[in-house]
Image (cartoon, rainbow, N blue to C red; front, side, top):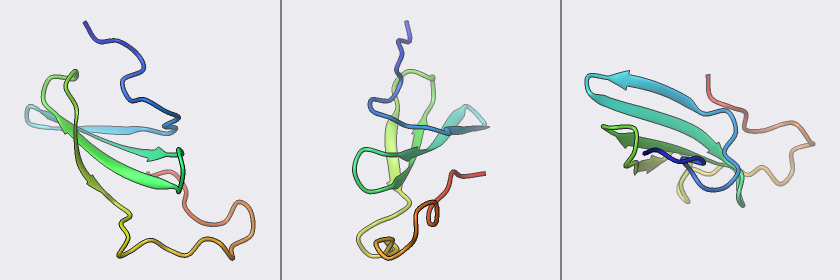
Length: 75
């Protein structure tokens, strides 16, 4: 049985798509630095982290931006 929450923490605006038998989820993770994650799985129960969109090598510097400017939910 699948139980909620599927992902721990505050993960607003999830986006899910299907390719063949696999489902992919992208969501904005708000526990700490804004972070987008891509998750893959095949049976809607056992999810596995595929990659982080933002890494130490490509994190934008958001410290100088005014409020409400910066990273928004995926489309």
